[in-house]
Length: 67
Image 1: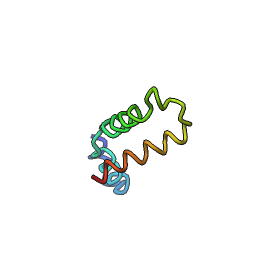
Image 2 (image 1 turned 90 degrees about the vertical axis):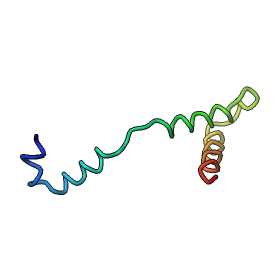
Image 3 (image 1 turned 90 degrees about the horizontal axis):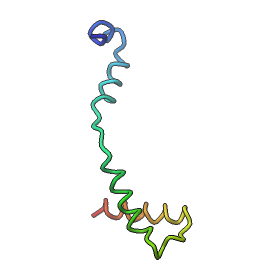
């Protein structure tokens, strides 16, 4: 492997690579955010300005995180 051969010469790069490659991949956070967005952006509220809608989604999502 590349890391076995060159890794000892690049300890900082090795640490960074281990941290990055150890991260799990997930779309759960995005899916939750889209769910909140769909709940707020209904037929009755489809005239909300983009910034206002983003603010409402942000507040709602963070309120759920605090519970």
